Length: 245
Length: 245
Image 1 (cartoon, rainbow over the protein chains, first blue to last red):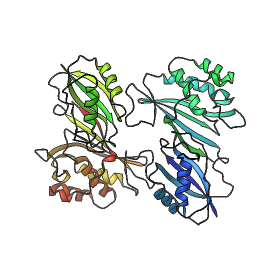
Image 2: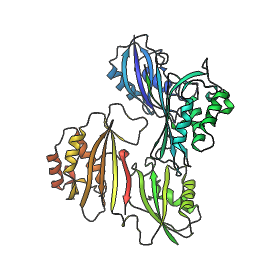
Image 3: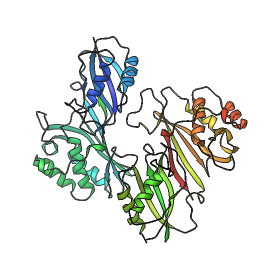
Image 4: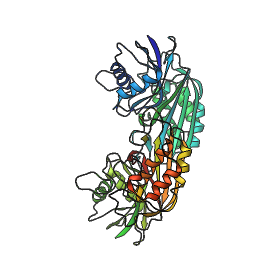
């Protein structure tokens, strides 16, 4: 019995999310079933971030306890061979101590949110970006974002389904950068509330449209009231990029 | 009656190629049918490059003669509204003179070919890259590529189905650059033979694997013999980036 840490990339489009759900395709189930086809039994993959339906990952991290003694390299190849044709790929495998926990040992999670800010809709990046067909002011978005960085009660930016005990979180980074036709939001924190990144991005978009100022965003945060949040951004543009331990 | 130039992005995955083919989905037919739904009749879209099945475009150019007087902006929006749900997007429309021809007026075509050079298969970029799971020497590929730049008989790198009158072409640029986990090939010429870019990339891959040297590539070119070509690269990694006039 040994514990393995997996770093995982996936296209979230065909999945109901990371987490196993009865009767629906999930990334967790796709990987667990792939590993069971290797002769492993009674296994549970624990992921660092429970990404929602349609949310992607370039560096999700999970751990799993396996019966057989696998070399990390062989395990990676074997899982990738089995998980096809699902759009999931294990990028790295490492053997870790028994006290490593993908979710609870994480010290930071890094997300990226891609907004395609151009009039024509995406063709190549369909399901990969949030398409906003009118010009956004990325500088205004970045300015508004700085109000949100730090230790706050994020009730305004929290889903009604959020299971976190406390709405208080520390947001370490919320940068908005224009990259060609895209406006990209970088968000980092030890942990996030459910829907927090998409809620933040939805409100920053309003700032980019000139519909609210940095002061309005601060007032929305201070209100600690879900109804003060802008519309939640769609999942398509969100990527779990990496997790720190 | 006026002539319009369209700049087009598409995901080539679901198409049998750019060109209209009986009973098969094509980008040309998708766009022509979208435009016909705007009330236009008897139209033919002429593209600058006849991309093959699975080949993508970020800047294909086509022209079309239309009956109605469209403002370019309205035409772009109307076509994009009609062409959904196909993964095709018109990025730009301009009114052009009657002597403009997307194919024959082109002075240069620019292609990019993306190789994902890593052991794990692509998840997010499935169908968007050529996956090569072992390390390639991009510098050796670039060195071999320089042998191919210039005015040559490219019979070696030409499909048997190529309809071009002459196998002699001038290759203006063939650069190989490592960009993170990707090895990217940039190819520019006034015009290309059928399958030329994919044939060149297939042979450069052999150079990147140490299976042939720049001198071997020169000998293959000089042989003017299709059988001297390495295996043709798959379409997935190829993008028509832009066309000059």
